[in-house]
Length: 369
Image (cartoon, rainbow, N blue to C red; front, top):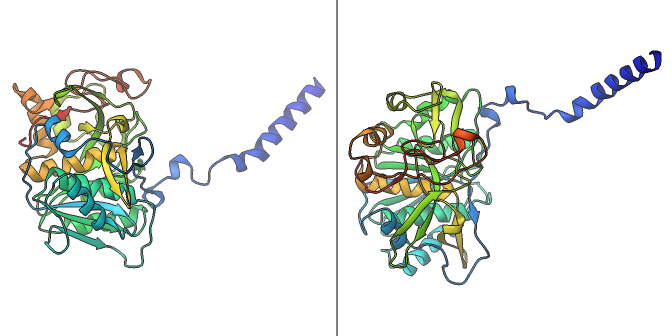
């Protein structure tokens, strides 16, 4: 007994000595907005190529019953760092797919750097995806690229504030996110606009689990799907993408539009995503960056496309989306995704009729909500 007792004491001492080195510098309970770093949920499929191998604007427009032209006001894209080639990238993309040029000279494109000393932060492909596809879907809208100095929460919110206070902005796309934090509800006012702009955020690419800012009740959280096309170019079927972020917020209460819809198992908290759109890299978007083409996926792509849909119809809000889904003709608004999952968490990871925590209300079939 004496030997066992001393061995146990030595074991406890060893554990106590080891613990300080094993515990992260920032514990879960201490993680707050000041620690937030946004990450772009973007994935490539295969190597870069000389010609585009991914989906084209025409294919996405066919899949979601979108018009070939249109767009109102300005779509603001919130990204990070200094991108010096984006206008050239966009010009190559437009020429490839027969789109009208969108340049600084013709006032279709504007780049606003929040800090002129900002350096490349490795967000170039993300920026190209967001700008090129927002323009492709709503070619008559103006594109405003707002580049935060870094991916810190403070710098990202400064960029969001600049966009939301522009009277010409009708949609704001945020293709980034990160872990939720305990004081996130204090930031909800940043996702409101005195001019009525709608905010869109990627729900994340890690499968089950809520992310911020998608978890804000003032944001349309956009999840991801996979598209399969028939030989004639129509959609054969659309299923959930396994990476689509979704779940129940730890900190945000359920907003009125979700309480009225009565989402199962939400327990009075905010559920995400609200809607979805193509995001699987296996059905990825064609994106030009630098000198080469990439096939790109992730909810990074679905957020700017939804922002462009808002520019086309000027009618996308969370309140309207849930009211439309609750209506008797909901199938005219959404393709209900009923196949696929994003993890192994039982109810919360499986698609089903109406609302689910993988694809939300579904993917769009109109620009009018």
